[in-house]
Length: 200
Length: 200
Image (cartoon, rainbow over the protein chains, first blue to last red):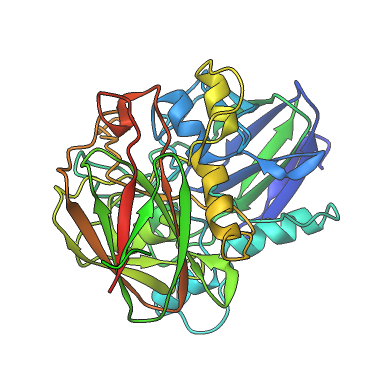
């Protein structure tokens, strides 16, 4: 952590952090075009975690917005969206990318991916997630039309946009600065650039 | 299994069955109004399973349709939608109901639920799922508008409507005849009625 209290999520990498109940975390899209796959686990029981499919029925939407409470797979509040200076376009329906995804995209050899980044970020804290929940894909722009068709678009966030989250229990949060450089999901330049967070 | 080859999924209960690669299973909405939460696991490794979040990017939609291939969390084909005589309204965004869900709906005491039904159905085969994947909620009618808002509506299927699925690997399939009787998700009468399947 730097003297400014900002922690880097380096481009193409993962990072995890503990956050006590009522603590706040500001996740910053430093360059404006970085998708950040975001997870939260109950610090006392990693088998309980923020779950998109359990949150959707409670917020009545597939996209979370400011004031929404995110729920765990035991339907307990785990995070609240306090502020969002971006246009509020985030995704909950697309799995974290993984080594298999890049094979489908005809990439030869190993490609950094959000699933391995989750494990690497948690490993720095000595932790292993028991499964890979559907992430909250911050700033990922996946419009869904009324027939359910999805599109893959570049983020609409600006440099410095942030979301402020409050922990509703002691949590371990994990982030992956998505390394997708084949589809324009991290901007039309297809250049993953990293992000930052700050515990408040 | 009866002499007709039809297996009952009793109202409010779960059932599981093994299906060999290339085998077909017809899932029948006998009464037309029953939502059936559906899971498929790799028979050789239950940690690999049909995953809605991994399927969506491959089919380009949040709702599966005839000819769609469903993928596992390792992005391998596991099931193909061969036929669907219903209007094709199925859900992939709402978690299986669970004991916690019914507490939110102010139900006192234990309520049957799809999550426990998954475990009960698999237990009859001597199996324990290592996690509870987002189910494919057959006939569940959850329209999503372009702003991501969801609605909870009754099924639009008719009695006898069926979907025909082909296994793309040796699988264990599990079904729960959803016991939801507080919201009209199993029809406006809020009466779970059960369903049937047939291995072909």
